[in-house]
Image (cartoon, rainbow, N blue to C red; front, top):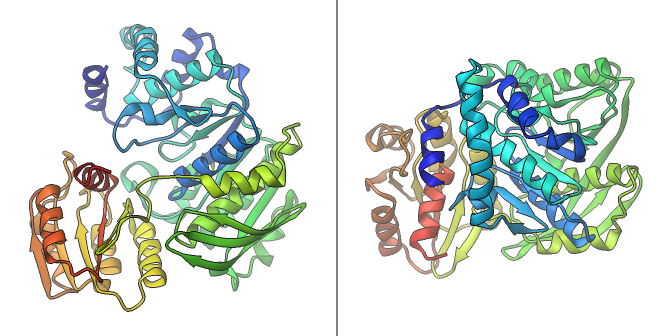
Length: 444
């Protein structure tokens, strides 16, 4: 199984829907028998998906969840009722799908990519297990992503920022057009996007497709004047908002004003104020699902939020010194991390372990993050796309005096733990691959 998927990885990214549609057709179109929540956006897709999964499981539903990438192994990508797929079952499904993928390649369609094969596996798995509903996270972009073959009950776009420019476009408008490709005719769209150009694209597409629009207002966007944009969207159906009450390293308490109800004093163990926007998106989606007959009570929402886990995203894993890991992998994620470090660790010195992939806006990430650190340890995650340590260090020295290079994550971890005083904070960030390695080394 691992060898087969590794071979597919070398095919790279090849966006398009034709191969996925053909593969699913030969599998009996399993997606035609499932009901979906489709989650897209630049950052926060995985967290929002995890929150939805936790709430729906608390309500008693046999929820299917497909996410990417994984931290440790492929089974994490396929969850049913809160449990990962059995490795034997995954191997059986890959054995079913792989000959069909080879047939498609032989017939001139081109070989399905790794993500296309995994998407087909997920949809077949959820069909066989009669999952209801299925929460499907977009892999890359939206319009040409393999997951965009489904017809959802509701679609979500968490936000839009610059990332994957080689595939999605170099401007916010181009990227927004790609991500907004998941908007379907007459299907409600919920977004927490706060970028004006992106919102204009989303609003315009909702108007064209008569898709009811719900917008989540965060504290950060309170001053954003949307009146000129709202006039473009006769299908706009309402606004939701959240308010933070208090937070600590154990979690956050907040209140959500939904379309139809108010949810007071909710608790979520995920840290960072951006998680409150993700939670509000999930609650908004639940309100839409109720119109499809799903019985999800306020208590289920409260319970699901209270027990949700999403590892590797501003997660505190050790104390004395405090060790926090965060898979921020682009400029927007770096801004969220910087805000969270300022919120949670006021007055505390930070030792930052940083490693990024070379196709990211690493200069902007470094400019955002490193001024918060007293020491930056540059390292290189185990990935062929990882940026050379010397290139990253040359950026870091512009903002912080003490920059060290340790070529491997284990060496960087050893250096950080040796250097930190008990009252200080060690932060691993820059790539989810780095975070996964750090967690493995710490026997997490």
